[in-house]
Length: 227
Image (cartoon, rainbow, N blue to C red):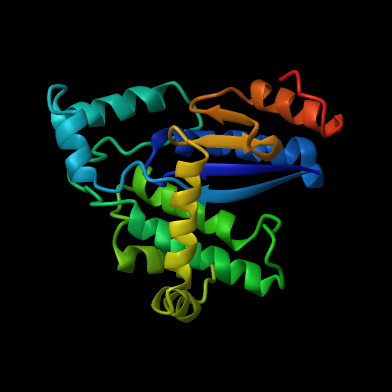
């Protein structure tokens, strides 16, 4: 089995686009590949990020135009025309925290601690991305997160407990710390072969497929992959 650690930020449009590649990996390789979803911090402070990175490029209006241009290159993406203009989530961290609690609940429900098969986490993660990019909702807000998750049958009481106990915070902190240790450059990033191979950004499915197929060839531990 090939294990992939997938780092992303929920407010990153490239991660929104990358979901099609995640789905293609699952369809192509099935149980031969296991994907562990983790988070990196790209939009921790969106106000500061836009003010700094887009100061001379039109601010929120310029960022809006950029995202709509990106979306135009992906026929499968649906992006709201007013994204970031009226609805401006202050941070991705609150959604990441919520999703770490969902991930914990999903694994506990499955009776596993290892990364589980596609389950509630995958559904809610995609629903949150769609709520922001497609529906222009503020997914940094607790009430929006709960509404989206409840629609998929998530036990909000269990989510609150995971957050109030500190366990969701600990898991999110571990994600951010490991992203730093692995020198994750941004969102999305695929990490394979025990950290030896990192694929970052808008990569095509064929490149990801080639890396997976090479690892499925099961080289010896002392044999370097050609990918």
